[in-house]
Image 1 (cartoon, rainbow, N blue to C red):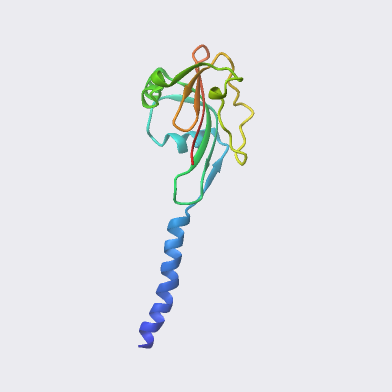
Image 2: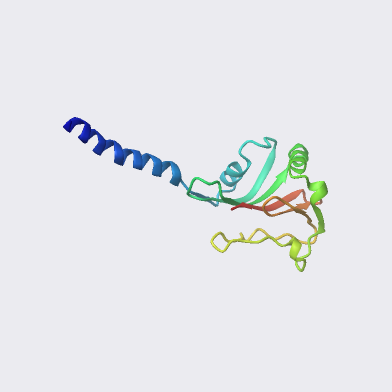
Length: 149
C-alpha cells in the first residue's frame, strides 16, 4: 500500500508538469532576417529568394500566433509561386497611397514596425491573409507584414 501511495505522489506532479509543458510551449522573437524568413516560410515555397530584411515573433503558448515583417528580392519562380498561393490577382488593391486606410497595415504595439518597412507609391498593394503585401516590380522587391492572432 505504501508503495502505491508513494507512486501516486510522484506520478501526479509529473503528469501535471508534462501537461503544463505541452500547453505552454516556447515563444520566438528574432530580428535576424534569415531566421525570420525560415520561421515564416517553413518549406512552403522552397524557391530562390534574396532575404534582405526580416523580423519574426511567435507566441509562447500552444496556439500558433505570429507576426512577421519581411523584405525580399525573389526569383521569378518564387514570385510566381507566392502570387499563386496568396491569390494576388484577385486581391490587388492598387498603387500604395499612405492616405488610403485599406493600404495601411495594422501594427502591433509590442512588435514595432521596422525602420526599413516603408512602401512607396512604386509599390502595388495586395490584401493578404493577415496583412498587406507590397510589390515593387521595377526594383523586384516584396515587402509584407503578416500576422495570425
